[in-house]
Image 1 (cartoon, rainbow, N blue to C red):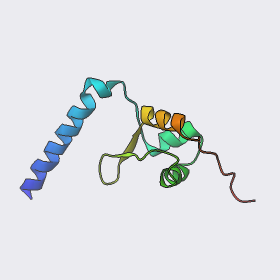
Image 2 (cartoon, rainbow, N blue to C red):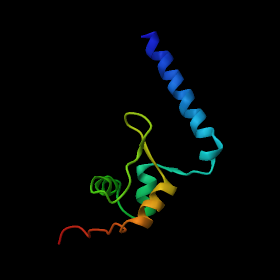
Image 3 (cartoon, rainbow, N blue to C red):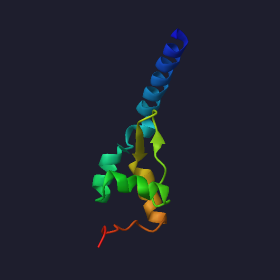
Image 4 (cartoon, rainbow, N blue to C red):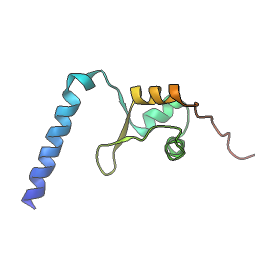
Length: 90
């Protein structure tokens, strides 16, 4: 069990060092809720867009934590058709 504790500590250090580098200092990481708010859609729709290829895959930081780089989302949307809101059932 101690072995995994060291591995977890090392992983946290590597992630912290990665996020502290100058290249990522100006990079904005968005949670699903933050991205949904910027795109004016629901969190569920964000994941539907990812599944449909209308948004880039998120970065997986842990088993239950994902983030998107806003610069990656903007670049993806600039080169692909912007996702449209469905409007729900009629």
